[in-house]
Amino acid sequence: MSDSKRVALNPSQQQVAHSQEKHVVVLAGAGTGKTAAIVHKVAHLIRNGVHRREVMMITFTRKAAGEMQKRIGALIGDVPKDGREDTMLVGTYHALASLLIRRDAEGFGLRGRNFTTLDEDDAASLMKSAFRECAVASGDALSPAKVRAALSFAVNKRLALGKHFMQQFDENGGRAEMLASVYRKLKRAANALDYDDLLTVWAKRLESDAAYAAKLRATFRHVICDEFQDNNALNYEILSHLDPEHLTVVGDVNQSIFGFRGASCGLVDRFLGEHPKARIIRLEDNYRSGQKILDLANQVVASAPRALVLTSAKKQTSVAHLVPQANAACESAYILEWIRRKTERGVKPSEIAILSRSSRSIETVELALKLEKIPYRKYGGLMLGDSAEVKDFIAFLRLAFNPHDRVALVRCLTQFPGVGEASAEDYAAGDDDDAHDQLFKVERSLPRGAGSLDAWLARLRELSGVGARGEYLLGVIFPLIERNYPQNATDRMETLKVLVDSMKNLSGDMEDFLDAFSLERSTEKHHLDSELTVATIHASKGLEFDHVVLCGAGAKQMPHPKSIEPEAMEEERRLMYVAVTRARHQLLITYPMSGPSIASQRASPFFPVGFAWDEV
Image 1 (cartoon, rainbow, N blue to C red):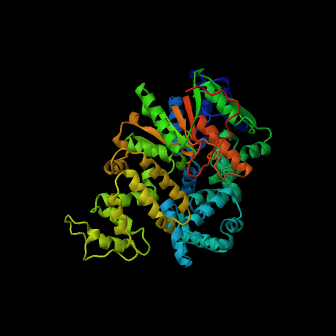
Image 2 (tube, one colour):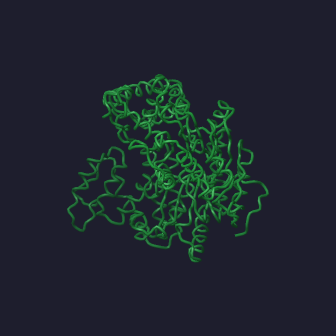
Image 3 (cartoon, rainbow, N blue to C red):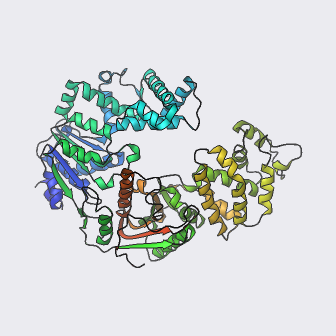
């Protein structure tokens, strides 16, 4: 029997599995079983005489690559291999490029296969070296991180570097281009490639070496590219030059949410324009969510080009709630109470996720989880307690609570102007380990620039209550935040305001509050079922949960206030679609009607007018 008859593929998935056209475009909606369809396609090919070594599968994560290999292996385990080299090539663009380049490094212009692949830290260090070699000081206008990000974006979008740098850095564009040139020189000298180089080197040889391109074309007769909506111009260029005998691309235009990385959902239309005879197969039977949730998702993107209409294949019930709250604190309290009711009824915390457009929208909820000592895992953005400004803020409270906290002392001192880490460490090392507070020793004076520290700590000790201490510290710390984080001081102060607003409502003492930020958060310490998931929408892509809370879904939060251009606005709409389609059974949507930076707001405009929301 054929592989596709041995499992329950629906008619659309069967079409994918048996497709034989040169170009196939699979438009696969959220939860529609695209992975099952394409692994069965590969299994069908191999069962019908295609050698494993003739198949290349391109994914966007190593996890997805491993899952596909495992599932295909289970389907074709009884099909004998044609020799030791009869192995499929499955991996990310970068992994595949690295493998192919090492097979013939000299052909790619490298000095042997022992070239170095620079990871992010290595590349950052090399860019810093370029700054030093060019005698350019890092600052607000130009920094190693900014130049690397701009360079990477231009490379992946195939933009003219000089023009892009001028747009990004204005009058510093020329210096940025010089730095990028030196960075490339340093890589060549080290016989090293960064992640972007792996793809540009591969693309360049495919374009310039016809014999090499023909060789790959003959080797890999079947290429399948998953998550095609996440491709960028450089990825597309590689696919175009590969031009295999059979090319299948799989994706969902309405799940294209990585434009900031250079991804373009417009590549689907470009592909169809260049290959007008391509076969289009739509996967719209959803195996994840109930129909009510899918109705909402369908209506969110109904006006988008190539929108799919998802139908629940499981015919399961589901509910969708929209519950506005007065402010962020009320929103947080409501969500925690909702979660408490769920867990009391037997729902495992691991079946619940709290999503938001940005880490900012979820900070109050995250703090409440901390203070209630509710275990959670976070995907996307920093944990609240890991953000630099919160660590700075907490250091003062820790030092007021425990005068001998040497780590906190060093962090406090280095926030002040003119106090470096070395002098802070020297001062902290002078502690004689007696019961006295080293900051008030008559014979020692604070490092120059940090003279106000002792007064701050004295006042924090005089005050009673967690909220009063937080409010006082918020009132004096702004000059330090403004100095240490000049690019986004206002945003960081907003985070601290959220923290202090929550502190005002606490009934516990300072010890309880500080413990909430120091308790071990390693997921290895908790049983998986005991953990909630907290995630940005970007980080939640590919995940699914029985119960999903989408917080911060107000009109001034989704879309993001900076999303003004039509293209950016449409990507924000797709973010909403991705968030909604993470839920299997229950979707709770909340937003604050007012807040520190929000005078008043209604629900996101992406929600359809007149939608029949369920009662809570």
